[in-house]
Length: 117
Image 1 (cartoon, rainbow, N blue to C red):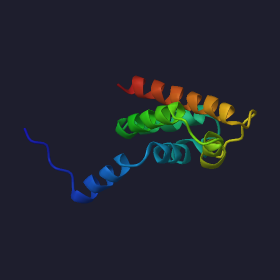
Image 2 (image 1 turned 180 degrees about the horizontal axis):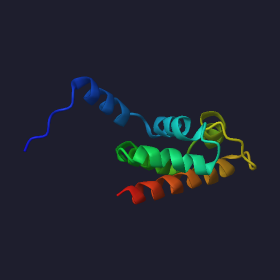
Image 3 (image 1 turned 90 degrees about the horizontal axis):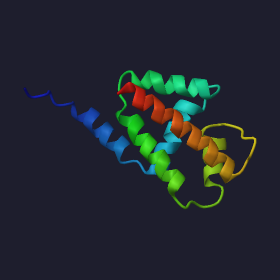
Image 4 (image 1 turned 60 degrees about the vertical axis):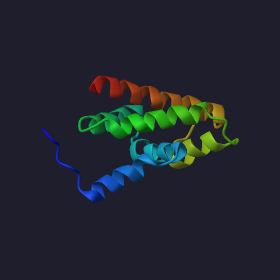
């Protein structure tokens, strides 16, 4: 049985989302799910809400987050991601503190994706 094709505007938007750089995917993830979550429980709830419908883009954003954490980035990049894009204050305002925060977000996201399978 053939599946119906998605309308062209939707296919184009999906291709656009998939083509974003890893850093842009992380920015989008932080702005969409973390910025206004009010804490890590809120972050988990945001991820779970999305995972009820699909995990496709959550998986892509997890891959991007893991890639960004593994990359050699200019000093201050991770800290700016957390402070600016997530709007999150850190006890350790350094790239190391930001990396720890982003690893926690990645762990929550991985757990939600695994639970949704």
